[in-house]
Image (cartoon, helix red, strand yellow):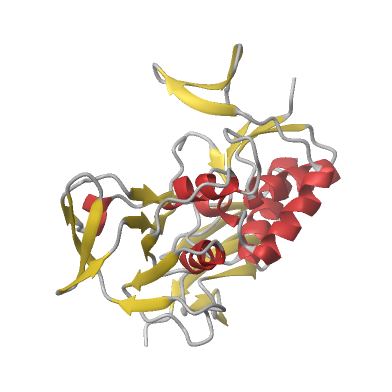
Length: 312
């Protein structure tokens, strides 16, 4: 019998598992793919970290979690087991849907979510020859670079301007929004604002946090909107310490911003993550500037904490 079941063997799940191991807590990591790393599998700097984690943490591959008649089970070929409350979800971002993004038109072959293309690349396959990646983040950039290494033509369409020097290879970047897809059997062209761009493939690389098992605790991008690997790793450390804490003494947080791991934190831990890109916040009477998309904050050792966003 395992102490905790961690759903997902990406950066967040593996980081949590390693911290639990250090604390002497039993765990099991399950992963529905037959490889680890998830969305970070093609990010060179993070891939090295994942490989180091895999030397310390065992993973049960081709094992998934699913809900059947309101009950969540771990399921593998030839068996299943009910998951009760000793579960942490580490399934990462979900890809936004085309209706969410306001993309209309035909639905031909050649439209893929980001994670499906990662799977293709892992198995040595390519999604197309003339590809548009719709994304405003580092994962879209790394995917473009990986595809270009394999001789594919790639254009990145981003609603925001990507920073100079972000791309290490010469991918064309179009600032705009994908509005419409045209194609009969296969994608033929994509409308970006008011201009048609010829392509045979559209990859959606726009993401949102999503915990598909909200009755369970979660780590990483399943609950935190961040592209910072350090924040993802820190979420695993915080959760491990929360799970290990035997204290019944908590800090209650009153906040107008989302707080990870929640609005009640063990006094043994006293650490939270605030996702708020470029914000200034006041924690009781101390001001913090969040330079990235999230920040790790050490809380004062008091019973109650107030966190407020500074509006300029």
